Amino acid sequence: MPHVSEMFSRFGDPVGRRAEETVFSVVLDAVWFSLRLVLAGFAMGLIAGVSLAVVMTRFRFAERAILPYLVISQTVPLIALAPLIASWSGKLELFGWEWPRWMSAAVLGAFLSFFPIAVNTLRGLQSPSPASLELMDSLAAPWHRTLFTLRFPSAVPYIVPGLKLGAAGAVIGVVVSEISIGLRGGIGRLVIEFARATTSDPAIVYTAIIGAAVLGLIMAALIAVADTFFMRNRPKEIMS
Image 1 (cartoon, helix red, strand yellow):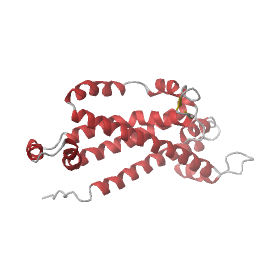
Image 2 (cartoon, one colour):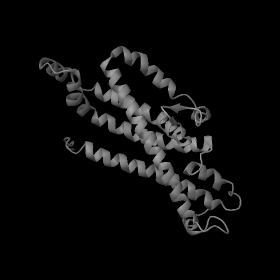
Image 3 (cartoon, helix red, strand yellow):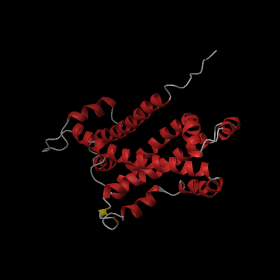
Image 4 (cartoon, one colour):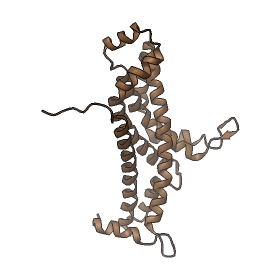
C-alpha cells in the first residue's frame, strides 16, 4: 500500500504521458457526474419511501401486505439486478421519453435508499401518542390534517436517521451500478479504469477511492444540513 502523501501527490500528475488533464481534474469530473446520479436516486428513493410509509400508515392492511416485500427486496443482490435494469436503456419509452443509460444507475441508487427511509418514516408516523390522536379526532380533523399537523412533525427524529442511511445507500448503489453496467464518466467506473494500473502505479487507484469517499462525505454533509434545518425548532435534551 502506498504512503498517504504519495496518494495525494498523485492528484497533481497528468493522467497519461500525453494527457493534459491531471488526475485531480479527472477525479473531480467523475465525482460531479456520480453526485448528480446519487442526488437523482436519493430523490426517487425519498419520494418512494415516504409515499409507501404514508400508505402503510393510512391503511393497516397495506402495512401487513407491503412491509414483508420491502424486507425481501433488500435481499436481492444489486450486482444481479443491475444488468436487468441496464437493459431498459434504448428499449423503454414513456410518452416519447426514452430511458437513458444513466437513469439505470440512479434507479439502482434509489433501490438501496428507499427502504431505510420507508421503515423509519413509518415508525415516525406511528409514534404520536394515542391521546394526541384522540385529540385530533375530537376536533374532527381530517386524516390529511392530522398527517401534516401531528404525524409528520412527530416523525422528524425518525426520518432524519433514515435519510442518513438512505443517502449512504444511494452512494453505494450508484457506485456499484456504474461498475456493473459499465457506465462511463462516474467514480465507480474510474475505480475500475485506474485499477488496471495497480501493479505499476498503485497510488493512482487510491485517488479514485478517495474520490468515492468524498462523494459519500458530500451526501453526509447535505443530510447534516437538512438535519439542522428540520430539528432547529425542536427542544434540546438537557444532560443533568
